[in-house]
Length: 585
Image 1 (cartoon, rainbow, N blue to C red):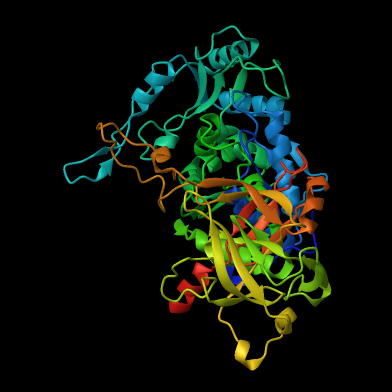
Image 2 (image 1 turned 135 degrees about the vertical axis):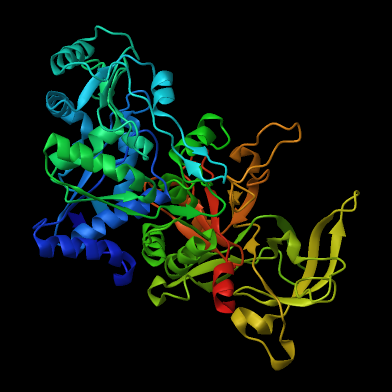
């Protein structure tokens, strides 16, 4: 296993409970090495919750000098596709991890899994059932509440086909594989206990008939193994010592161990940890797919999505995500993490690496009346005050500038320190100017602000009597380049999108009801420093991030260059609410 040098190591305490299990296993001789795996299903793109999972797998294998596998659990042909495989691999590599040559597919094990199913049948512990899916559910039973409202699970009923002979089951299973029966006509079920309080152990289905073309095996198979059957046996085939899963699989662990025991294979051990939940987002491929299919977002890589691709397009860095995953640690119980902490980790990273530039999103003309009409002057600006090696750049100052529209008020509110008639401000890196008036059109809209400049205040210099409270940014109207800016907010207006209410007509609500109506604003006519023009032609696989001074952090969007105009996505604002909250606590 290889891992890039710029990875963030986990806090020692964050994986203690898993590490302790591993240490005990090594000390007892249960295992003499550590071998983990990340087993994505190629039925969607990875999200930040998957980051937590594969970071844990990678880091623990690295810590104990072990191996790591990337295995695609591709046994559901209806929903899987090669495009998802490629997206998953691309995202893991972008995060800074390399699985080297340890790439596997559960679909490569179909013959092996079939043989293990036959083995379990021969032991008398599996049978072919003719019940339909609905009938199987009815026979299994469901949890109900008793008179004290406590959930109980009444015993299920045995299938009338449960006692078929081994010979008959072997024959029927072979004929299932040969395609003699229609989809759903028969299933192979494990023979465990129809009275077990854990419903998953009430004769779970091992194989079902599905005539679906598999993206890798084509039409070679018409029966496919169920996840709970193939997953532990795929782990065993690869010699996985520690199968690390999210907490919802804890109830599946007895079944995981049963299949390993009955198949008499390598005794992989399953350990569960809490899954990642973030406020203002949903963390399920099923729900994310719904957003994509219903075109509630532009795609899997929409910058409002919690997918790795969406975060990358938004302007997140691998280092920020790894730092976040490292700092939240690993627990046994699920909890909700404030998305503001993820944003804090991002700001901490971008503040150190992002180059500073000036851009004006909602432009208003500023005319310097005592500046010569054709005169242009070069000023010096710092590229990143946090990084001396980033150097400085030259910016052009001229008579007509663009400033932000909300940096001028005809009648200012209290404690307003920007431009208004008679007030003075500093133009960033340039001069102090004083507002002398403004122009309006026939409709009463302000079209330009007029001012004079003080030559003695160039580049931060100022006599003692010229101190001002406000500093605003600007770009030269004659030299700025047009840019498109996309302002993103949370996709969901509430912290817990899955908490839904009844709709006005009394029908059940859905999580999509909580989508914020204005989570995207497109500004097509913004202006930026000339240096921003070059990003439209740069390679799209290169991440380009800037801090637009006073506005926030922005990342070049892949749409840049289609018409020669750079497009920037707002990654995050400059205001750090998490740091303020943490300080109060």
